[in-house]
Length: 271
Image (cartoon, rainbow, N blue to C red; front, top):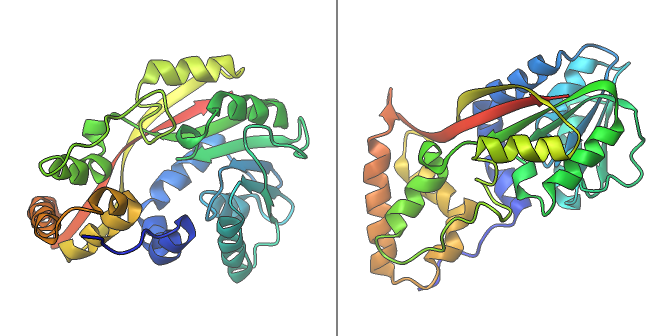
C-alpha cells in the first residue's frame, strides 16, 4: 500500500509552524537569554530555516541591531521572509548560504551566534562551528540546541519503536547527520573544541513540539515529519494497526485533555 506523498520541508513547516513555534518558544527565548542579547547587537543564526530563533533575536536587538539568518533552502528562507515582513522586522537579513563555509559572511563581525536544532543535520558541523567562530567578534558567544539521548526524545523514538513491531528499521548511526548526532555530551564538547570553542554552560529543557486533543492529529504529524517513507509499502491493515497502537500510546501522554510529544534538548553556550 502506498500512503500520501511525503511533504517537502517547506510544506511541512507551512502546515505546522505556528504550533511548533508556540510550543518551543521557551527554548528559543532561553537561548537568547543566555547570550544576553541587547539592542544594537549583531547576531548570526545558522540553519535559520523558517526563522527560529532569528525572528525573536531581531525583536530583541531592535532596529539598531542586525540579525543575519543563513540556510541552504531558498524555500524555507522565503517562508521566514514572509513572517519577518508580517512583523515589520526590517533588521532581519536572510541569505542562502552553506553554514559550513559561510561564504560572503563578514569575519569578526557578530556579537553572538545561534544554532537551534540545526548542527546535527549538517554534513560537517565542525566546519560550520569553525566558520561561526571566525564570524564572531572576540569574546562573542554561540548558543546551540541539540537533542539528548533517544530514550528521552519520544517525539522521534515512540512512533518508530511501535513501527518496529511491523518492520525492521535501520539502526541509528551517531556518526551520520541526524537527530541524535550530539546526544553524546562528550562528542559534542570535543567537536566544539575542535572548532575553536570552549563550552561554558550546558543545561537541559523538556520541549514539546506537537500537541492536540486528537491523537489522530499527532499521528498525521509523525507521518509527515519522516515516517511516510517508512510506512510506504506496508499493507493497509499493518498501517492501520500501527496508527491504532500509536494512538493508544499517545493517550498515555494525555495531560489536561491534550496529547503532547517532544523531548529533552540540551542548550549549549560556548565562547
